[in-house]
Length: 127
Image (cartoon, rainbow, N blue to C red; front, side):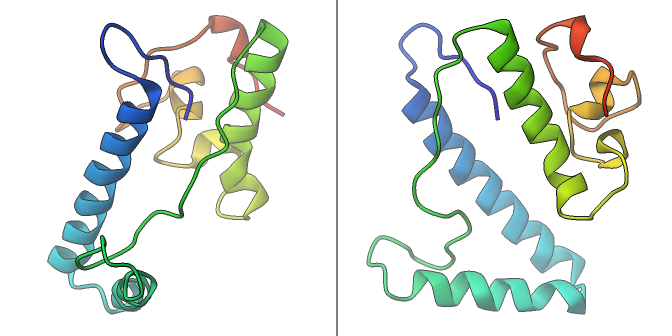
């Protein structure tokens, strides 16, 4: 995720709230869809949260993050490309813009479920 904090918000607060919201939404989705192939995920999330006092039910996200300050356009392009290529590297999709939940779709001007503020039109092409 590439994010910027404005006003009284801190990046730490934004990331905390993002992780809280997305973990609850994903667990809810897994429960509601009742897809047998997904139920094992709830077991893993529950097991990961067992030894932690502050975790009530499920531990969805790993601790920590790899925050990097973006200091230039080249570095920004590298980070955006890295994010977009993750599903390709994991062999989930063949092309970055094929991943339904990637902003690569926005840059490729394809329909997307995510609302994204494009950083720059210069990053519209992929490998």
